[in-house]
Image (cartoon, rainbow, N blue to C red; front, side):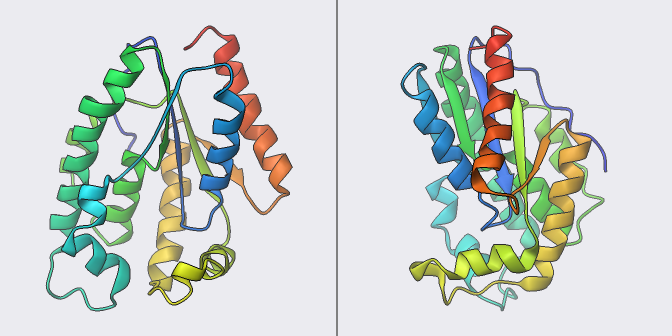
Length: 214
């Protein structure tokens, strides 16, 4: 796994990202951190990809349907990468220039994991785009067995019947772990109690805040 050569954060703000499979617990951890930080810090909460991509026909086709013959996956990946680049440079970075702590539900790593999991391991263009994306100050990756992640998703009333490509989930899990280790991320198993998981998150954030960031 080649390391992403992202650009350094040269703003007075802080960027914290949360990645992993659907159902990995990242949103729970993110919401707990928001609750803790919002009283003492100026924070900005966001997500990737933006709704412009999430609501597109090609994205919904890949998320909700088993038949993808109408679309080339590279076209979705390029769309998502473009969306993330625009979002980082025109939404996230301006907020960080205001000394805000930005918390992002998913980040560029998710774009890479999905591309690789679908068999495009040799594509170089995504690494070139990454050079224009800000490297997070902390990148959390939450890991859980695929069966548990899917069970958690199925417990959401609005997603109990959603199409889930199980084979893809196994590949995505491996890619997330590999990306984490190759890009200085923090890997946290959410099979342990929620409070224990959050303690790891809180301590990592506390360390960087104590070092004078944001």
